[in-house]
Amino acid sequence: MAELDLNDVSMFVRVIEHAGFAKAARALGVPTSTVSRAVSRLEGAAGSRLVHRNTRSVTPTSEGRAFYAEVAPPVLALRHAARGVEDHTPEARGTLRISAPNDLGATFVAGLVSAFSERYPRVSVHVELSVRTVDLVREGFDVALRASGKLSDSSLVARKAGELEAELYAAPGYIARHGAPADVAALAEHRCILFRPENGEATWRLDGPEGVLEQRVRGRIGGDDYLFVRAVALAGAGVALLPRMVAVDDVTSGRLVRVLPRHAARGAALYVVYAAARTLPAKISAFRDFALQSCRLAPGPSGERVASARPPERGVLARPPARPAG
Image 1 (cartoon, rainbow, N blue to C red):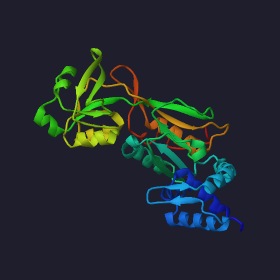
Image 2: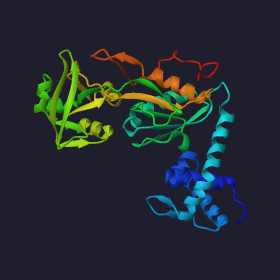
Image 3: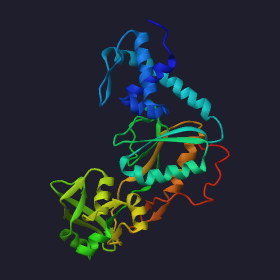
Image 4: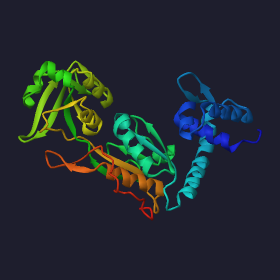
């Protein structure tokens, strides 16, 4: 076997982790062609085909799986060691890899990362949106935003940012045609856009002045992604129950109107998740603190503290802490 290029080995590990050349390239911040050529060189040096290539995905061959099992642990150890050298500085700098759910990516997360990047110009941010729960350590992520604080890995820490309270919204055009519901019971007579419906139905639990009310609603349109539900609501198809973080900018612009504004549904909590460390890298502690400040907790109708989607105003965390918090 010819001598192996360690950079090619590292790129091969990324390709297997992300099941594709394009995703691995985005994680590394290089062109896809660079990653593809690296794997081809590695195959030439190893004298064996390591991956099956097709238009949709990349999967390891039996030789590739065996090779990955041997080289992945030391590559991951080197990756963490390199980050440790980079991160043991009181100034937030380097590349920050964030995993976040699709539903919040184009709204809350985009605004959060933009504001964070402006506050910390020496940190480069890469966000990967996914419906799956990533393995932070194995896949090389620094931070994850999750709607659950349950951790299967005891080496992780989850900090609660707030409640993802949901509210009722509709487009002005829909209200002009059908009117707004006068009370919770009236929702049964309206067209509703449903998140993960069962047989075209869902039960909405709404907290308001009368306490918690349950209302069975129906709708011809449903989806398993809040961004899809939001888009259908913007098109004027009905009333939608959406997380405040997803709809807040549409309300500000007038594209959506809050319906039954004294009622809301208590949703899942939003957590900032990261690997535990005696001395937390400055870029991670800076993002954690910034995210917690951005999810400012404000009282909802039931007295619960809920997360809003506004980044901290100027002056809040205006300067990074002199020493990173652990």
